Amino acid sequence: MGKNYIKSHYKKSNVFGKKQKINDVVKYSIALAIISLFAFVPQIGFLTVNNFGLALILLPIIVIGACWGIWINLFVWTMFGIYALILSYTMIPNVFMNNPLPSVVARICVGIIVTGWKLLFSKSKKYYNLQNLMIYISPILNTIFVVLFLQVSTWLKVGIFDGSNWGIIAFLSITWPNIIIEWAILIPIGLTVSMRINKYNINL
Image (cartoon, rainbow, N blue to C red; front, side):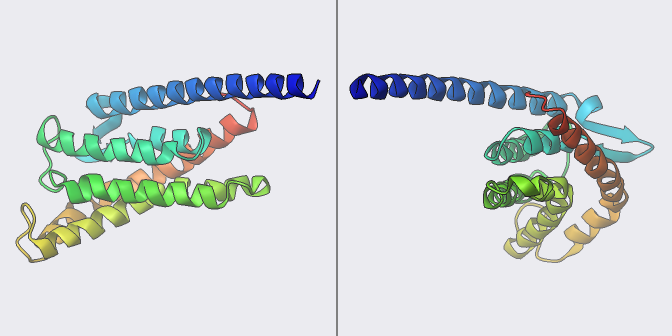
């Protein structure tokens, strides 16, 4: 009887493991499709209003990261960085972002911090909002790391940066209104949507 119980338990665990893997593949595929849609349809992901450019692509990144587990945060931020680099050479030319340091590496760093934070508080179900705190402020982290790696590019004299700080000054002088508006829109909306989804136990 003991052997039969072990076999039965092993089969159930194996089936559960396969279902979980399939579920993860589906989630990552849907996440990639959503990020791709927001990236390559500028009217959705990069809205321009009266010369203000809003990176609305950050909204699904916040919501997906808050609702779909831990490691998917690193995935969506990495894909965002790769797409930002591609777009800077193609559909949305951007002399600041056609550099892998601020476009890709900066976003990977944000993904690592968000993922590490969720891992740190993954067992603290009582403090669910604390788990997702770093996700909700990730647009601010995104700006900080982009500026940081623009400075690194200046030190290394990468791309358009010649060793002076004109690149960072130009970037901030051009984009600071956009950044403030993005924070004001994305953080409360991302927080509200993800909390609603989790409140009603919506299993995406």
